[in-house]
Amino acid sequence: MNEIVIISGKGGTGKTSIAASFAAIGESKVLADCDVDASDLHLVLFPTVVDKGEFWSGKKARIEEGKCNECGLCQELCRFGAIRDFKVDHLSCEGCGFCFHACPAGAIVMEDVLSGYWFVSETRYGPLVHARLIPGEENSGKLVALVRQKAKALAEEKALKYIVTDGPPGIGCPVISSLSGAAMALLVAEPTMSGVSDLERAVGVCNHFGIPAAVCINKYDLNEEIGREIERYCSQRGIELVGKLPFDEAFVEAISKGVPVAEYSKGSIRNEIERIWETIATRVKKQ
Image 1 (cartoon, rainbow, N blue to C red):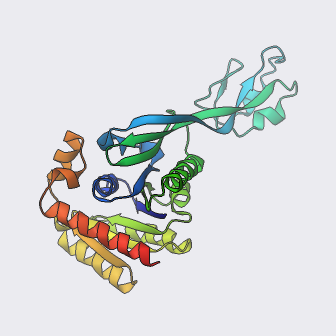
Image 2 (cartoon, one colour):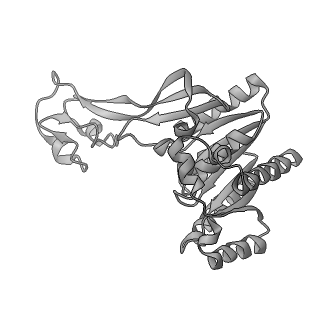
Image 3 (spheres, rainbow, N blue to C red):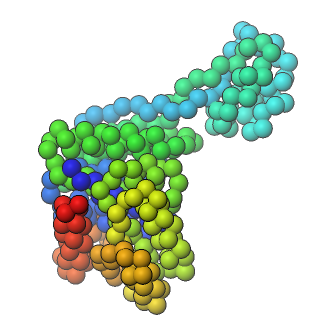
């Protein structure tokens, strides 16, 4: 199968709207929401969960009361203020293990942490693999990797051609985990003051890991001067500009109605998104 990952240098550029539209337009695909810190693809796909599992990641400290002699050393040494009255606050604990090694009574143990859940669901557009972090827990990229593994296994099982992945924003560990081994990345840019630098960051990650990239400019007509600057940037670096989407209230209206914009809008927006999908699908087939 061919995995297409939709990313951006920052949040709010329209990644999820485009991913949801690809879900409505494309055929023979599995959908994956790897933006597990702020998962929202399910809001327009209305999934029915068919499988669910726990995600355990990292360790946090716990004080065994029977062994603790209340010397106070752990409270004194903890730089995160996570230990008070000889109890560990799990929301404040960073799992560094310093207290575990320093405790003279051996009263502190490091325990695995339930950090979130993964889901395999059915939608009207095909299967969806997604996840949810428990509030306060961090995403190291491991949960992203787990979502992708489940999506790939599902695509192989059902003999589907594509995996459409709604990736996380930025350039950190979750993005790297989303891109690893992908067939192509679609970078969604916006014509803002930081739009070019945001795009440069995302392109840099793709180049570093050898992932072919293409660019779509969303809301390009909000600032056509910066839009042209993004076009020049793509041209100078040999990056294919696969489409330009105008600012349109149909995006907001579609979200409020809980449907992909390509399904809600029957005019130029849908036509342009269809053209972008066909361009990308054709390109990954040739790789």
